[in-house]
Image 1 (cartoon, rainbow, N blue to C red):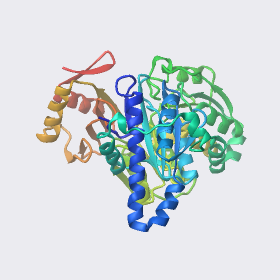
Image 2 (image 1 turned 60 degrees about the horizontal axis):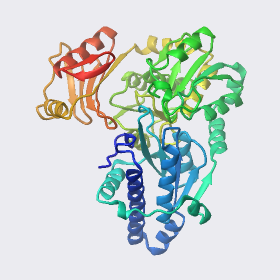
Image 3 (image 1 turned 45 degrees about the horizontal axis):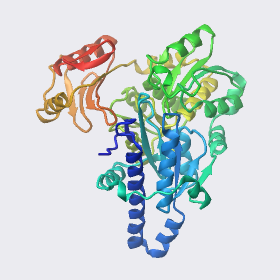
Image 4 (image 1 turned 90 degrees about the horizontal axis):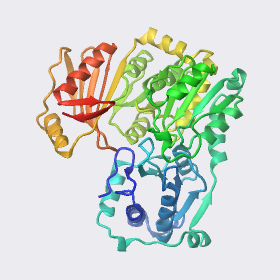
Length: 495
């Protein structure tokens, strides 16, 4: 069964990520698109629907993972055989570039072959809709229903070269358009004045060329590490975190860089090391950028965060007479929330964010460029600006723990949390409890803790935030003990 999670369909290569499943999914997407055209015929008339069908195209791009390019070709062959024009990006592409191209060419759909920040043994497919956003839950559910009744005999395919010769597969290069669009949107003149010395870590992923081009154009001095093609990602998760950026941190301090920038495997998430070697948590990146937009750029508007992201954003919003909107996990909800409320920024604690007026999905390359602009415009180091924010609004401490377990244990946990709805006994007074996405406890002191199953991996996640590191560890320990879970040698397992 092919099942989309919060960030697309992902599976282990050779187990579920196989040619059969990739082409089945491609066939399901093709049938879904054709079904949409049939509905348009009934709603708006045959002529308009025929015109839309004749002009129908779909962007396909891929990252550096094992089988990504091959899978992009398989998908292209299936879509072309179903009379859908494929615009195949001719080289490895960051996911934000693919999303930008969907929006720029005014197409209804796009596909990225990637497993984002997952380990090397995973690959997957992200589906995008018009405007460069993650496909809606309604869309992916309908595709799942189509795909999971198909058989291999239902797949239509044509040879890749035949698709090229017939004009049904067209190779494109949107690199310059994407880069120029970013350069038009950031304050290049201010960045040129500072001549920052920056170290990039694309984590063996696809961000290097795009990010390097933007920053060199703005006259930054750039060095790069971990940029070779390595489908094993150097033996680590291609996910920027305090635990995966040790080399970047050490080099920033030793060689006196102004900034260290890391991006995940497909470049939609961002990690930052500041000038003194501190890892800037994604929560703080969001806080920095929201504060910068309000205080230094004078842009008014609210912020959208998911329910596992810092409540410090709420404090900033209230101070400026704005609103912080909470949505479920999954960037599609952030995109939707920004549109509904006219928010100027939206993001999540895992490192993804977007700015109003940009693509409606995560863009680690643009976000990194905006962080560089922030430093140059404010003429303050990140540590100084964070201190300014904490002096105004206080400081919050977050802890995240992840646990793997058997299917039996998962069922037990689900029953305990969401059927019996039992809770640990906390000393802190509880303000309210939400079951909108997982189970989130809001405390009276503005702290919180959430327990939820991952939508992309077989993992239970616990996130918590309090005003002291001691408090946040304590409430997380109590939840861990209550659920009868433990961590061992850096990993987590059931008792």
